[in-house]
Image 1 (tube, helix red, strand yellow):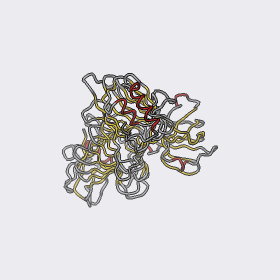
Image 2 (cartoon, helix red, strand yellow; image 1 turned 90 degrees about the horizontal axis):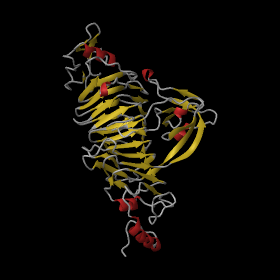
Image 3 (cartoon, helix red, strand yellow; image 1 turned 180 degrees about the vertical axis):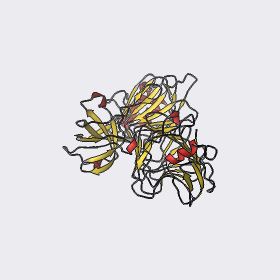
Image 4 (cartoon, helix red, strand yellow; image 1 turned 180 degrees about the horizontal axis):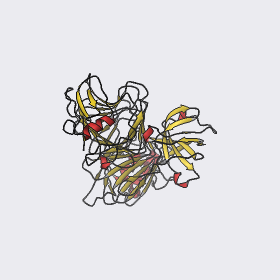
Length: 479
């Protein structure tokens, strides 16, 4: 018998495994629930309960195939940390109403009771924050950890979660936007923003680790519908490979399959396509976005809904949406690159950035503020130092407004020295508040959202506010 290079455990277990091979080969459609326990499991087990859990993801893949057809709901529970040596690799083909759920494990670290809460108010650039002075909770130890409400006088708040973004001292912390648990409705993930209340009982969790996550989904036939999904939840994707970051998550570029991550922590350079990131934490040097859509919110393209980023997001070659109060904390910045790169901001906050722009537009990238779905732009936040600016245009376009050509109301425009600036422009065009138009170049630079919107609304420069001297071309318009 040849030794299986994936499994070097004792010969007795290998022999038992060979016997199991003959009786336990399972189709995901036949066995709808799987358990993997890297510590106590055995690859000779059935894998259908925690007591009979498999030991490796590799064994799960051996049984169902690298590219299994997912025709109904299949749940895979990861009961511990999955090492780099056992990559979570799969190329699922999702059909009809098929859904693949991969569940990590959350482990309780501490618990407490909120004694004070400051609600998120976009108009005043105020993020959510809270205190626990009775336990008391030392939040510095929990930055980057998930918090969930476990008991409340308002039952609807139970299960809502956020991330600890910053320790503010005196047992007080800044939080990411709190949202209810994501509901998979079969069309798009759905969650609701909530404001925690004084007296709410909370728990702080760490999440089980996945050494390498490499899942790229596609659809199988024309029967595929919007109910087809691949969902990963409660996982800390660490990608421990020092020399080569191998993790990726998404769907093939032209696939109608939806891929979501909910309440996950990503600590790697993420290559993402067609992903919805629901209330996730991004503690990584960069997120590279490819394909049609990726969003950070409670449901769309990358779409990022809620959640928090503790470092930069760069390399947007596709479409990134920020929704539901997605929060960038500290030195985080977003760089939009390439002609295909677009950043759509429905509701995104930037707090405490320390130098230069929060958002940098390069290589003819495009930033949309409040255009998506006819919404009002909610770009909010506060820089940590003077001399910063919200958006810097190197070469590209900044699009303001809503459908119909009316000037937008930018709720909670960032508090910075300038709202935006054009790279390389020494002296900007002055803004004439009487004619609501840009005039000749002068020293009176007044790069504010309000003045920019007025200039566009007054059809200044043919309806587009342009910089006639910098050579960078159109940098904003109403659509």
